[in-house]
Image 1 (cartoon, rainbow, N blue to C red):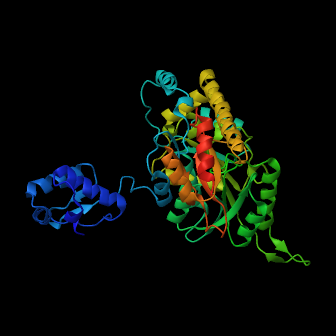
Image 2 (tube, one colour):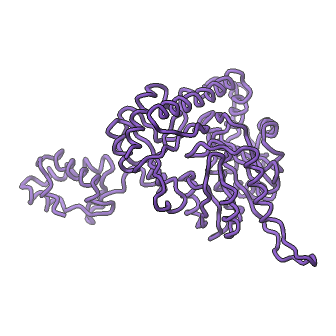
Length: 459
C-alpha cells in the first residue's frame, strides 16, 4: 500500500491518524507490514523522526507492533482474543445515548457486596489452610441449593460461571464430532464453545414456550445425544418453558433413550444415553418458575444456575446439579485445574442468599426488570411492533433488515446486538431478521427508545 498517498497532514499526529483510519476501514489488516520509516519519510518529504514518532504513538495505543529489523506490523483490534461470536457482539460503533447490546444486568440493581464481605471476613479473619482436598462445595451453600433446586440432584457443585459449567459438562458427555441439539436462536458463546470442542450442532427451533418438541425429536433422530437448552428467560428470545412443554420435551428424550423391542422381545434398537444440559442463566431475577426436565429425567439432566445476573458477574459462581455419573468426573477433572471455586466467595454468596437486605434487593431487581421489559413491549405495541412479553433482560426484536436497523439505531445513539451471531444454523430464505435489545438497563426514556426501535425495524 502507498501509505504516503493517504496522508493529508504531514505531522506525527496526521500520519498516525491516517494509519489508524486505514486499519478501521479494513484497508490495513492485522498482520500487514507497514512501509519502513525511511520510505514513508522520503515519500512525504519529512524527517524519519516524524514518521518514527507516528509509529511509536500507534504502538503505544496497541494499533501496531515493532519487530525490530523485521518491520512494523498491524495488530489485531482490541478484543481480538474474543471468540468469533463474542467478537461480533462486542463490535460496532459506541452508543451515545443507550448501550442496549451487552446482555448484562443493571449494576444499580445488584446487592451491595461490602456488607456481605465484611461479615464473611469477620467470621473468617484469615484464609483457611488445608482446603486442597476439602469438599469443593461449602456445606451451607449446598443446603441452600438443595432446598431450592427444581429436582433432587444426585450431586451438586459450584464452578466459575454458567459457561464454565456448560463447558465442563460437555467435556464429560460429548466427544470430538458428536452431535448436540441446541436452540435456534441461541446463546452465541455456547455456539463458539461447541465449535471449540469440535461438536456438531443441530439447530432446534424455539417458540414462545422454548425449545420445540418436534424439532428436538428430529435432532435426536439425527443422532444428537446431548441437548443444551435454556429453561427460562431464553437468551435472546425471553421464552420460558412451561411445565407442559418441559414434560413434552422429557417425553421425547425418554422415547429416544428407551430400547426398542420387537414382538418376540428382541432388541431392535439399543438404549441410548442422552444428556440434557440446562442453562438457567437468569436464575434469581427471572419472574417465571424454575422448570426443569430433571423433574421427569433426574438421571439425565445437568441443571446450571448462574448468580451472575442476580448477584454480580464478578462473583463468578454458578451452581451445577445432576447425576453423579456426570458431576463426579467433572469435579475430579477440576481438581487438576482451578481445584475449587473460592470458598470465601461461596460464603459471600451464602450471606447474600440469606441476608434480608440482599434478598430484598434481588427481589426488587426482579420486579424492576419485569416492569422495564413490559414497559418497552407496550411502548413498541403503540408504534405497531407486536412482541411477546417473555422474561429476563433481553428482547428479540424482529426487523426488516438487520444491517439497516443497526445503522438507523447507531444514528439515533442506540447500540443493540446484531441478530446473526445468535443463529445456530443458516437462516432459511425469507426468514425475518432480528436484533437483540437488552431492556434490563433501560431505566428511562422508554418511549423515545421504542420510537427509535420501531423506526429501525421498518422497511
